[in-house]
Amino acid sequence: MKHIATTLSRVFLVAVLAMTSLNAFAQDKKYAVYAVAFYNLENMFDTIHDVRTEVIDGKEVVVEDKNDYEYLPDGANHWNSMKYFSKLRNMAYALSKIATDKLPMGPAIIGLSEVENARVLEDLLKQEPLKDRGWKYIHIEGPDFRGIDCAFVYNPKLFQYDHCKLVPYVYPPEDKDHATRGYLVASGKLAGEDVHFIVNHWPSRAATDPARVRAGVQVKAVKDSLMAENPNCKVFIMGDLNDDPDNKSLTEGLCAKRKQKECAQSTDLWNPWWDTLRRDGVGTLKYNGKWNLFDQIVFTANCLNDPEALSLQYFRHEVFKPAFLLEEEGPNKGYPKRTHSKGIWVNGYSDHLPTIVFLKKQVK
Picture 1 (tube, rainbow, N blue to C red):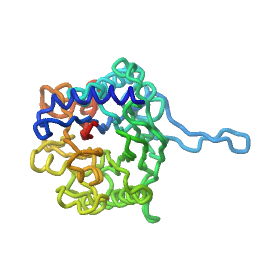
Picture 2 (picture 1 turned 90 degrees about the vertical axis):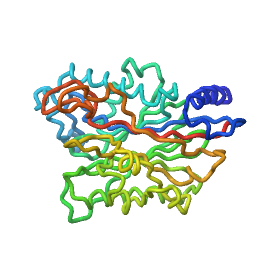
Picture 3 (picture 1 turned 180 degrees about the horizontal axis):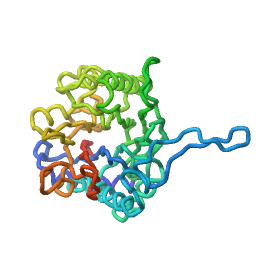
């Protein structure tokens, strides 16, 4: 463990030296830097119809039949092995590049959404850009009627995984909506500290606004429960929230603050993406010429209250938008380059861009 820590500190110190904001650090101090990220993979389906069976009275019975038909070989998208493996290679390449311009080893953990099942994750990590990295995945099959789930991939040299759980999205009794994704919680240690990551994919904009506000309230309750059990832990809430940072689900449901100074308690949540969208005009998906920033990473204020960074602290954040993830020409120039465009397979990546939060900790 000591050898690994020394090696990682050396790697991250090199990364810090390459960052433009190094002047903010005292000259006689050294810092390790870590990254956490989120990426919506946009319909990362395999080509096999997904069903869940149980043995009832000695017979195998289908108890859940997923609506994944458009991503089957005879479905609307004619989703065959060639397209599937091309999508795997594309997404593996994109994941392999996240944060590596600053950290050679990439993120410690990446939250994912729109992943069909564990088989897809296994195939993804076998692709050439990722197969030698030693990454692992975290996944629990969820209730979504289309079969798309949330998941994590992580580097076990950086994030020491301990356990996970899937907290269900709770509907009111009168709500007739289809079952949807829950909240996947991965717990472990990062930089020797207790951390919890909650990856989300909140109800789409086809649902009513209260559905996402309800999600914000429920995730805040999960965060409060984790911190009641361990007040010193740090909680990172990430995902495709299907709302912008200033929408009610974030401001009133999750109670995420726009300004650091508004965080009065260490258990409060700060959302760094508000100004990214409204002040800087940077988003993660584009619709009718307008950027939205649905893909956010929000975290507890105890990542802000240690100016010496003796514990893990916020450093910076960014939308990851290299040229290869964007359309280079045509009417959608500058949009994220997705898998399908107007029903035509264009062999792209995703309609969303990844987001990254960088954290720093003083190295003794």
